[in-house]
Image 1 (cartoon, rainbow, N blue to C red):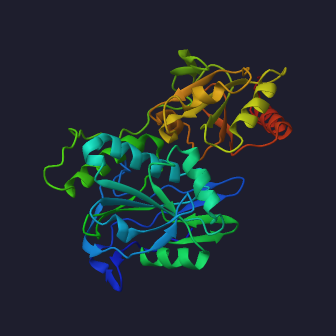
Image 2: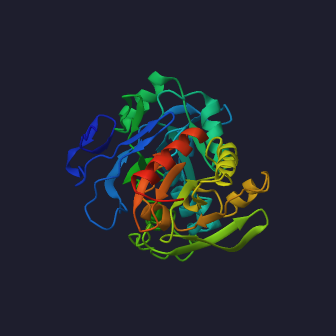
Image 3: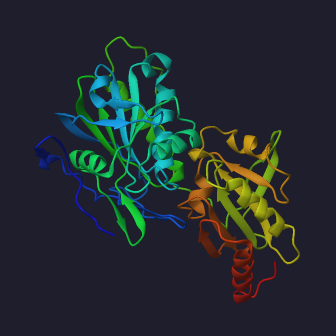
Length: 382
């Protein structure tokens, strides 16, 4: 993984004095099996970026095409605080965390303050660049009417990436991009730079930090909801820790789903917006009901969802599953099970150990073979 140093600046000015103490993150995403690299942080237990001041450098202007196929420019949002993020239009790893943090921050600020803020995304995918891709992402994450997600020809996108010192390239079949987020004030000046953390449980504290920073640049007199600091807590939940998460059904939350020690268990971590999620869960249902299969649970990672009811709404459109589905509302379970992408399959031995995991979905026969092989290697019965 390449690790270029991060700096920030605008136009021809490079603000070398603002080089951050950390190293640039990379997010690598393959078409079928994305690979994710966690950020290097300055604090061992706190990955949340407090933001880096950019000193009010003029933000480079650009003109792109949004999810509706309409042209827009950064300059037209003068007078509003712009939250500008670089987002891969097909990302299933860190980008949903970035966009959810943006949305949550806006909600925290309250309606009056939110009216003075504009959310903008710039496509960081060098392949999926047609407007249909930014539209699909916006629909999947419930953001069609909440932001302008811009794309353009590859040369045009590369020009914008360069202006904002964002790297995006294909390395060994994977998309590698820098997940940068800028706060640009109402006068069109760069004020703060953030790098999104990988941990699912970091969404809430990141949203809190982002909301507080946005509030600094709002016009005087604008009413802002009381903002509370949310502290990141490293997950203490893992395969060795008994945990019960709320059970999701087509009619709502009913009961709990138990995870952790006891017996081998196959957990599938997913989100409703994942491509082919319904088909894959239906296929998993057939596998789970077959003789010789281990206990299976589904876990909706809600910190990436547009709402906590997203999984419920998806289940309403499906045939009943043969395994229970729980909801991880804080992201702590996903973090504790070392999940770094969605979908994510994890087989535990019932004694607190992960004995097999897979990034993305695989055909049922391959799943059956891999799980059986892992169980046999550890002398376990389903």
